Image (cartoon, rainbow, N blue to C red; front, side, top):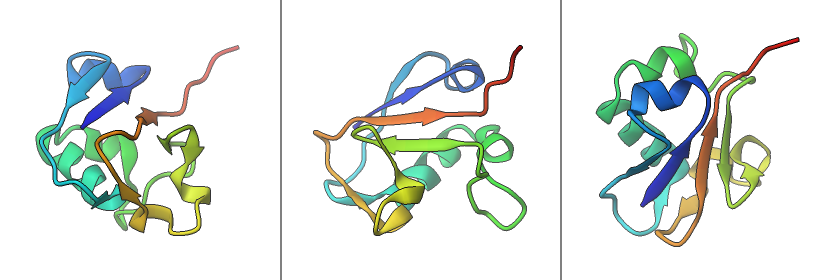
Length: 92
């Protein structure tokens, strides 16, 4: 499964797109855990002390923010889905 990272997360991942060898039908949370396992520095960028994703971080499945999907992080993902992870980006 390919996951696209944006902004500062690209530096941690070593590029824009990373391929993960995961099971078909993995949940969004399982994929998130796999990402953090592969790139431990992402944990502090993505999750708060309780292990919940920061509100300013966006985990998109096929263009929809998982935090606003019916099953949230229990949403199933297939290899054909597009997954994008965006950290907060500031500027002005």
